[in-house]
Amino acid sequence: MVLLLSTLQKSIINYTIDYDKIPEGSLSDILNVISGRDKTGKGKGSNPMYLDFNRSSPKAIYLDAAGHLLDGWGTPFILQRDKQTGAVTIISCGPNGVLNQTPEDKAREPSDDIYVTIPTRTP
Image (cartoon, rainbow, N blue to C red; front, top):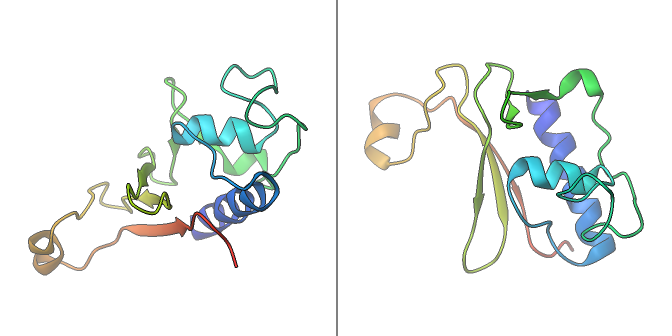
């Protein structure tokens, strides 16, 4: 799971370095963009040079019937964008499938959520 998130993070960072922005849309849209396809799957628009930034093995990518990217426990990843910085965080809810959002959630039990953040600008 951590390997998939790390690979997605690196792919999005590499896209950001080349295009000076984080791809827009849902996580499925972003996956299409970093794989050399846009939201229509025709490879135009957000990635005009058709570059494949996604280095994930196809066996490591799981989609549900609606096209949502799933973690290893079968739960859709959550995509959050920071409204001030534009940074993107991809979250797996972990084995329990529950997102621990509040301090009260985190106080009740240790969180098993897995987070990866992609900054708007990379150093």
